[in-house]
Structures are given as C-alpha cells and as structure tokens.
Image 1 (spheres, rainbow over the protein chains, first blue to last red):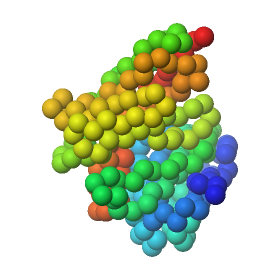
Image 2: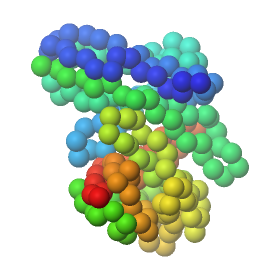
Image 3: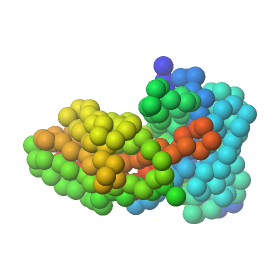
Image 4: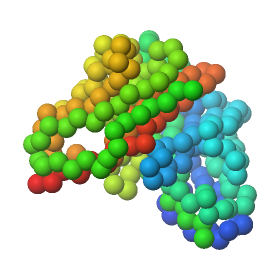
Length: 117
Length: 114
C-alpha cells in the first residue's frame, strides 16, 4: 500500500514550457486535491476532484489545468510555466463523506519541487 | 470566508521544554479542526484532530482542545524531543459541495535542540 505517490520529485522548467505533474493513490479514495506550498503562505488549494469525472477550482487555479483520469489518478498541468509557479506541489486524497460526525483526513503525497527559470 | 491564523515562527526550544503553538480560526458552521506535521523533505501527515467543541485530540504526546468560545485549537506538548523538529500546520475543514476542503494556517517551524 503506497498511499499517495507523485512524480516527478524535482523539475526545472524554463518560462513558457509545459509539463504535467502526476499523482496516484491506491486507497480507493473518491476525493483528490492539488495544493501548492510557498514560504510563509501555508498550503493553498489549486484544484480538487470530489469524484471521478468531476473537477473544480480551488483558491489559486489560474495557470493550471487538471484531469481526473480515473479514480486513482489526478494530474496537474502547467501549459505555459511562469516563475510565479515556482513552488512545492502536493497531491492529497480523502475518503468521501464522514464517519459519524468526523470528517475523514486527507493523505498527502511527498511533493514535487518545481522551479521555473 | 474561512481562515486560520497560527503563531508565526520559527520557534526554537531545548529538549524537554514545554511547547505551545497558538491557532485561532474563523469559520461558518462547525468545522473539524486538525494539526498536520511536515518533517523535512516530506509531505504532510495528520498529527491529531477534533470534530466538535470541547473535543481533545491527542497523539504522540501532543494535545489540542477545540474551544468554540475562543475559536481556538492550540497545540501543546509537555516535553519536546529533537525528533519533533518539523513544521506544524493548523487547519480546518470546510464543506465544498460534499468534498471537504482544508484551509491551512501558514505553518510554524519548530526546532528542538539537544
């Protein structure tokens, strides 16, 4: 049981290049998320997918697109990278709904460190 | 909208010292509250959570109590260890159409010296 996996771990892009960050989970979770982490900013939600076939914008979606390929996989695409997208990107997944009054926790991947020059 | 404010770091303590990291929140309704921990070079992992007023979450010697009257969820540990050095994030869950999202504080970096 690998949990949430992300590839690549590190990436350097030039301004204007495109790339796709991959995320997969093997916990049969319905909900998946993409965050970016910047110094002093905490984590900010880029996009999320409540279930297979649906995606929605989060707090900072501009410059990104996502695809929920199937229940396991949720990719994040940068069509034309900009230096402002230099960040650490985390994917997370969660079982949908609640257990009694308790919401389920989100499980995070190890992150992708992206630098755009 | 929902928001979380936690004390800014960095925090530097000696081993066996008492730790408090303050966290307050603004939210509509009755969110669940979380503390996540991020060790160097890793993703976030859940440390503890509380789902309703007066609940106490606890794990690995850390505790936090959900205080609705003060909208707070402060993290405490009686005796920190070097291995507790990490970044700690306070978060709350808000509903977004059935897929709860997390709203995070900015994180507090803790360094524990031997």
